[in-house]
Image 1 (cartoon, rainbow, N blue to C red):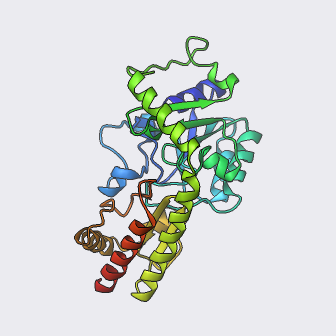
Image 2: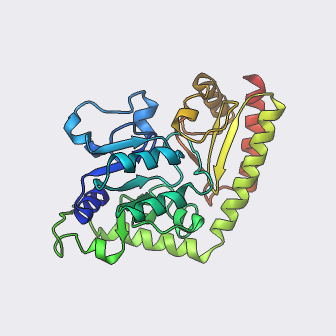
Length: 306
């Protein structure tokens, strides 16, 4: 919410591009074709949001370059920016196609619009520098969630100085937070980040992720169950579908009734997954290779029973 307000204040433009299936919090102007819980319950939008609040939100399919080009052509000099989960994790998990994020960086820069990375999931999870380090792209603004506070309630957004200086009291864009600078959350965040930087956490997570991906893919193949297993680093999602999943429309082709049976079958085997097809899974540094092996064996058993 604050990052978008800042983008509008900095550019003096009103419209924002977001992508269907991407969830950026429950601010009114962003609850348009959102992911996460709204998608899980079958209501991508929300009651109580006046149409006037969303008229400046342009919603496009993820991974569609031509749709973005068309949006900029149709909204000449009125787009403040693009907000995107660089690796969307609120409709399951799908990855940007090669060159897609680079294209977004180029088109926003060429039109004087801002590129906002919502790294609430990917920040400090895919790499020390998040998705922007992993893909080698520097957005104009970045948003981070409670992962930066070791799981405690905290969030942050930032960007280059000329944009951030538009915030009050230096600039005209208002921002405030009752718990800003909460000392407990800050202490937890510092401790968590120091631990990440001190250890080989990311190498371990990459190894465990690769082990899970290969194991789950083989389990589905052996059970003759159509499944697409998307993964990047420690983030993953398996879709029960034959076709690749690159965006929300692809994700909606997955057989959700089969996922529900799979979820309960895994639960019976002692493996607790998110109970929605439209939530990404995460491996943590607390997991071991043995945990992954147990998960794969349980999945193989459950898939044979589906």
